[in-house]
Amino acid sequence: MPRSSPIASPACPAAARRPAAAPRFRCGPWLLGLLVLLPAGCRASNGPPAPPPPLATPATDPAVALHWPVPPPPALQGADPVLWVALAARLGTADSPGGASSAAPPPLRLRAAAGSLSLVDGEGHRQQAPEFTIQWRRRPLAQPLLLRRRVLGPFASHESAEAAAGRWREAGAAVRIARPAEWEVWAPADAPPPPQGTAVLVERRETSRLVPVLRQGGEERQLAGPVTLEAAQGLRWGEGVYTGRFRLQADAHGGWTLLEEVPLERYLLGVVPHEIGAGSPPAALAAQAVLARTWAVRNRHRYAVDGYHLCADTQCQVYSDPRLAGPEVRRAVQATRSQVMTAAGEPIHAVYHATNGGVATGLEEAWDAAPQPYLIAFADGDGAFRARTPVPLPAASLPALLAGGAGAYGADHPRFRWQRQLSAGRVAAALAARGQGVGTVRSLRVLERGPSGRVVALEIGGSSGQLVLRRDAIRRTLRELPSTLFTLAPAEAGLWSLQGGGFGHGAGLSQAGAIDLGRRGWSSERILLHYYPGAALQPLEAIAPALRQGS
Image (cartoon, rainbow, N blue to C red; front, side):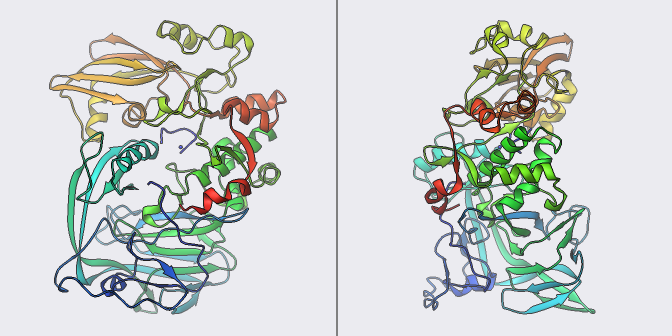
């Protein structure tokens, strides 16, 4: 998520906001059998359907697609646009909760908080009950489907995948970003090679499709997707209650997603208290509300390949029951209603984190991404702190910085300063968990630091070779490290000591700094302009044309 992990698809056209009635789709007959859309070549329509194109190959030949076909999510429109947020993904697969340890995919149980649920499937069949149990079954396809693509990655974060996708797109590839396990960039098999890295050809022939089956009264009925669900008094999900509407729809990986259609301002009520803490000063809460809103609209394309905008976990912004937001959070969201941070007519990369350890960083230090003028390295403290903390920060000055920090904003955060030890065995295990290895680990060496002093390249040497971790891959691999702002020294054979500062990637707003500045009487706008110099605070309507261009 933007706050504390090194994680805050290329743009693709999005359909207009769909009406409650299920639209017809212009697609070939084999695709209608799948009940989903290809990412290209099919469009939603409320008018009469076009005649289906003639089949170019016999029905026994497989159709070819980049991934399981899924229609894109709708474009964001209006001052309070509706986000499609996944409450649960990969349902019916081994990746779903309980799926890996179950002989059969666990059922999906949907319960009304009170009263009844109303369920309508893609063919218009309606059911009403206080609770529904949906099982998962595999059904044969009328025509085989060959999934065929070039895959670049994996990447430690969406931001790094997005940068790689941009470079590949400039080379002429039609790319998509997806996250089957880690972030990847997908392109057609005949795409030109990527400028950096090697894309591997992946093929899989599918002859059956996972479908939802409604079980009621001992009987089963297959549901045509997408399935819409309304809960007049809320849907009980996990430990919360959500008011929806809801959709159950197929994803790009062969599973299904349960998502909530939630207006942006209500979504913020479920995000802000989890990202910065409901007890923060009002100015810090207001700044966080602006950033959470900006981050959401800037990242509206994050899961476009799966047919929705955002997830509800740490790969996005943590989102839970909006009803639990207290009065201070509600006032912060209302006071900043529709306000976003912008630059050049677009929402900014509104990344944020827990604490920067006294030195903010640029986007290009945290991720393999292009620099942004409003995300720069600077000493984050009072005048005396800035005077003794030059930026770019020389490596020789880093030990003194990490030994102190008086005058830095947010210095009372528990991870403003930290110590860790890394053993050869723990490093080897961390590499193995990501399918990498260098044999017996013998050395750790910092190869490069950025202007903020953070480690940009870390070399791991072993008995069978060397491996270099860069930027976000450092913390993604060595997960016990709170940040990449650290010094490294051997303690004994096979053991290294780290002295560090900060928690998170270090770019954009330091939440500990914002809380500190709020207590000092700074306004939310002053806090935002401090951490994003050169950006502007504007109403969402000011960038409406950019949002309408698609997800």
